[in-house]
Length: 266
Image (cartoon, rainbow, N blue to C red; front, side):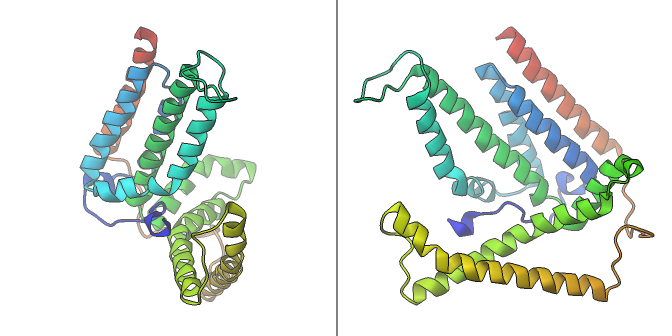
């Protein structure tokens, strides 16, 4: 399960999506998230789904990688769906003791499942096709107007990009620690929920120690390179919008309009 966690990883490529301006991809991701939560009619979910299929095909990212990123959250999706089926009032499907799953709960569970799966797959495309450096530059440029309010735009962008960058590293570190604990006879896959929780304690302590050690090493490396934040900092690559970025943002607006149209008509 740990090895299936792919969010935050960057897969280098030369596709159209890789060549887009990072600001365009950030705005596209925001528009896609809003689009998902605006969906009301069942047919409206078809718009973000087909749009996402097109984006994945253009990015040339393997479907195996994209679907693998959904696997770690499947227990959460199943748990949420079951809760909605049994605890949403409405017309009962069957009666199972004190529990009465309803059609309304089933419909809500399917909606939430679609939203979560499409949300994870869509937002993952941002990190799959954008390097951490480009992501930092894109965030900084989009948040630059906040500098007038003395908001630390560069520092906040750097923190967010570093956090995304270290997600795969911490996942890999967790996998190594789990393998080492299992080699010493630790059992983390059997027993009750409480027993599994207790078995995670020997995993969490070395993971936190490793995370703090990596953070200290990164801080020392940045200090040795005379990093002083965004003041007086220059860019090796200057970001600039192209016609391709304009068409991408226009497609997001069209998709949003189609969702609204489906909600009104159906």
